Length: 284
Image 1 (cartoon, rainbow, N blue to C red):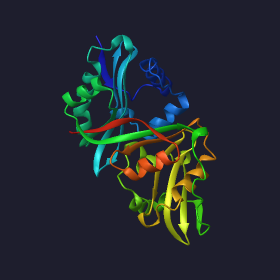
Image 2: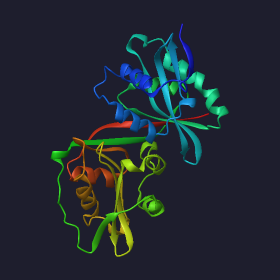
Image 3: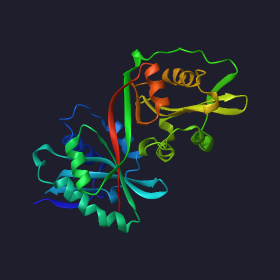
Image 4: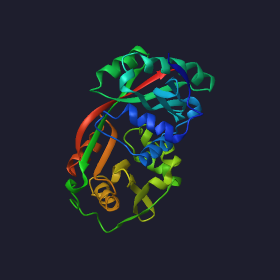
C-alpha cells in the first residue's frame, strides 16, 4: 500500500535517484548537475511537492515549482514520474489529487504544465483532471556544428555588450509572446549565473537582446525591437553567444506556435523544428 506525503524530508541525492529510476527508459537522460539546475531554475519547493512511497521507495512523484505566472500565484509541474513497475495504477493522479488542497492552502490559484503533443495518454489524463490547453509551443533543436553563422553581418553602428535583468522592462517590450514558465524572467533570476545576457545597442538605445544558457545550449529568450528587425541583429547576438556554448546542441524551446518571426529566424540559421508541446492550465 503506497503512502503519499510531501517531499520536504528527503535528500537531494535520494530525489535524484528516484527521478533517474522513473525516467531510465526515456531517450533523454540528465545528470545530477543538470537535475539540480532544472529544479533551481523552475522554482522547486519540496514542501509543496509530493510523492507516493512504497515503504522507503519513492515510486511516483510530482515536483512542483512555485512562483508568479500571468499575475497569479502558480504551481508548475517541474517533473512528474512513476517507476516503471508501478505504472498503470493511477499513482500520478493520486499524487496530484492529494496535492490540490495543500496547494490551495498555500495560496496557489492555478497549476501550469507543459506536455509533448505526441504524449496523448498524458494529455488525456491531464484533461480528465481539469486542465485546458492554453497555448501551443514549437521546439527547435540542432547540433551546434550545423548552425549557420555570419549570414548577414550586422552594421558597425550596433554595439554588442553584456546586460543584466535591470533592463528586463525594455527587453519585454520587444517580445512577440510571453515566455513560458521555464523561460521567464523569474526563472532566469533564480540562477542568473547560468546565463549570458547580451544586448545590441544603437548608441545608448537597446534594440535587441539574447539570453543564452551555455551549459545547456538553450536560447532562453531572443528578441529585437520591431523597428530594427531584418538587419542581422538577432543572428549577430546568437553568433557571439554560441562561441561559449558548452553543449552539443543549440535549442530554442517553447516558442509560441503563432510566432512566425521566431520560426523563420530559427530555420534561417539551421535550427529546425523537432516537435510541439501544449501549455495546459488548471485553475485551483
